[in-house]
Amino acid sequence: MHKIIIFSDSNKHFEIPILEYKKRLWKNIEIIKIKPQKNWTDLQIIEKETNELIKKLEKISEFKIILNPTWKSLNTKNFFQLIEEKKQNNWNIIFIIGGAFGLDYQKLQNYIDFSLNLWEMTMPHSLALLVLLEQIYRIEMIKKGTSYNK
Image 1 (tube, rainbow, N blue to C red):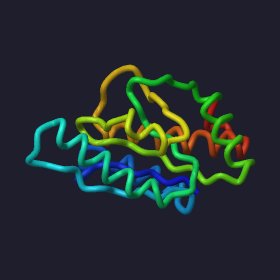
Image 2: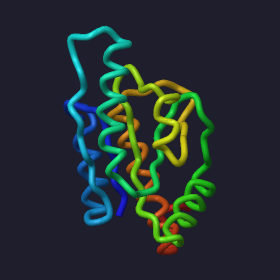
Image 3: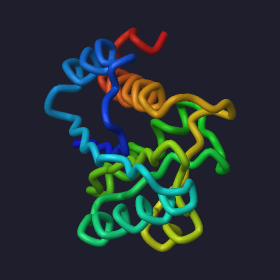
Image 4: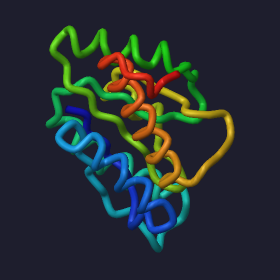
C-alpha cells in the first residue's frame, strides 16, 4: 500500500487523470489531503504546514519519501529499485507533497527517510501528484511484467 500526503484544497485541473490512476491502483493507493494554510505570510505558512506535518509523521511508521525540489531525482528504474527494496524489507511507503510555498526541509530531516525531486522544473502540486501516481502505477506494472513500461 502506498500513501500520499498532499497539502491541497483541490486537484480540479488534474482531477480526471488523478481519478484514473487511483482507479488503476485501487487498493494500492491512499491519498491524504491536508488543507493548506492561508492568510499568513509565506514563511508563516511554511512553518505552520511543517509543524502540522511533523505531528502526523510522528505517528507514522512507514518509509517516508518527501518530494523535495532541492534534492536528487531518480529515473524510473532506480525509483522502482528503491520501492522494491523497501517493500522486500516489509516497509509500507508514504510520499509527502508539500504546500505551495514548500516546507522547512531542514526541520523535517529527522522525520523523513528519503528526499526525492520529481523534476528540475517547478510544477503545480496537483501535477506533481499526477506524475507521482503515474510513476507508482508504472513500477507496479514493471513488477507484474506488463508491456506498459515499454
